Image 1: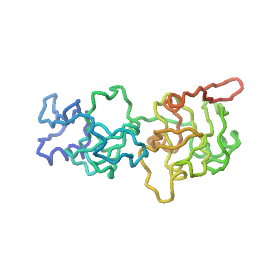
Image 2 (image 1 turned 180 degrees about the horizontal axis):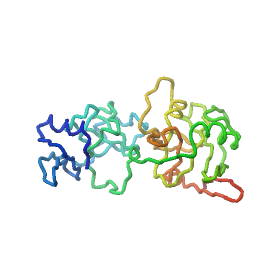
Image 3 (image 1 turned 120 degrees about the vertical axis):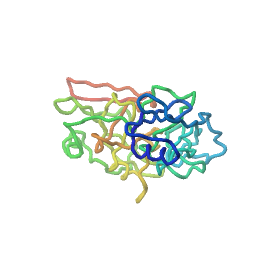
Image 4 (image 1 turned 90 degrees about the vertical axis):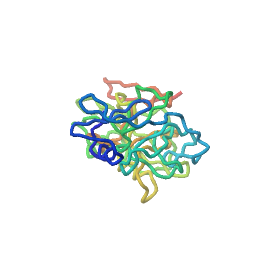
Length: 273
């Protein structure tokens, strides 16, 4: 259920009768406006996967040539009813020409395809409260223990396994991985907090700015090369961890990587087959 006032206002503009306390309910094929558990109005959505031949073959966000699927029913101006498409690789939303990105916080009503996983956790909704580590600590204490300079570019090639540290009284796991946008770019040394409680991997805006071309817009999701391996979904950090780079469980599942933490020696190792 959503109570976003902009979305409610958009529904009202379309002729939906909204009252204080109204909620937007999303189902597989409908957006329903509900007040006191009574449906006031509904809008039908088409959940049929889209033929990607009608769209640009490459996603403007992650550069993936994967299938575009599913329709979204709210655009960047909070107007409900416009037809948008989701990239199957990074879940970014675009218009039928593949040009206009729809910010994650406006995608309040997305019709689920029958193939969509109902347990999927939206990367824009997850949040982690970190009170013991922040950007300054990462760039000084943690970078010093790792023996690197945060966000420094390098022409060195990444090596596996990757060695990291167990840091502080709360035993935070940190590693430095090399990240680049394309194979023609130099690598950037990025310090990640390893947090497998998150299903997604995130880069803070400062890191995104470092690895993207100058004056580039910051996408919601970025495809990049992480330590020599293609990785399709680096999301923008937000909320209480907005200044941190987070290595989530999808990094390990995507690469088939193994994480080993030695809490006695305070060392971390990430290896790949």
